[in-house]
Image (cartoon, rainbow, N blue to C red; front, side, top):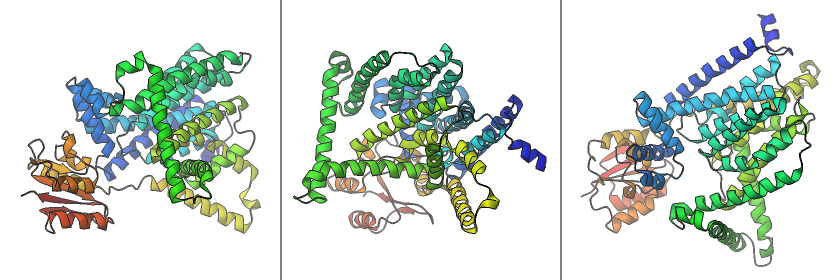
Length: 517
């Protein structure tokens, strides 16, 4: 047994059979983890309701309705395709897609680490452990989200990029471009990598005799195209521009988009000057704004990576060489840098980042972790460590394991929304008969298509009811956070202290159902 363990963690090059066994185990464990996460959190997420609504419109060839419901319809189209092929509902189709994409991402992570120089048995095992244990791979397994598809296609492009460094074949150049193009069908960030592909290929190739001017020209053209697409993406949802305007006058689209961004930034600076800075420090608003944006990115990245794993990534970054194959370091740094720029722009515009926005950045940063672990084991022996250092290592290990477990113990806190929807389904069969502030309640009651009757803000729902809106509605179902006593007091005051039904669980939110007189 000891000899097998030693061979498993040996420095010998992992042969094809060993690699296939590791990949097979990773795939089985990944599927099992997806099944577990879905089992403990069987309530559909809010984004999934949007995807299902869009897929339903695509199914009846309502293309304009699908685009108006969701401006990134490729993932709903895949759900529709899987649903038609397997004869299952859109929800299970979404779960199957997510399980497939996260499993593919796990396998690609191991393969990329090998291409970066981690082709030994030890590093292959380390890469597999990171891929199946880190919460970045596991936290969203119970969600139906397009980010899983984006991550898998992004990693496929990175794998082709690493293979291109070794082989220099045309097929891998095409693979890089194709991977980023398909990734952009899931998230708009993929377009940034599409337009940066010439630069990435240039710095990845072994022989860098190519002039920088063609690359610079390509990037300038790419930036112009990206600005047009970004302008369309920002303005299309509110009807500020039409599809035809993008072709007829792209410069106006770009100008209008960035004028809106500039106006939004100016408004944020005004708030900072008024609320945080006095009249004597108003000129420091730009400094405070920049500091806030940077802290948003750092906080979001640490939340996704977790502190112990971020420490390993930082250790691997500051120590040279970062990878056994030195030529891959510029490509990895460029990928991390591009992700950073994308997040910087997003944080500056929105002043917040959803946790999954930095999912691909976290996974890219994790590529260096197996090498960092090996370097630590080579440089430090357990016997050489002092008692204090051993305690520190044990605490960090326990912390890291705890973070890994935290990605697998996300038991649902939204069971009340599912219960309320199932209870209402027979009572609200008529379109418009339900008003709710939760898309999941609407979905489980079969009323997720009534967009005008789903208002996420409780105060807006109560205000609308006072103003006589939704006269055709028979039921009102409001989801309230367990600690949101203020909103609950508003509801009780506006609708009465005796709801028709209250759905609540020991953990999670509650849903109060009222029947309108």
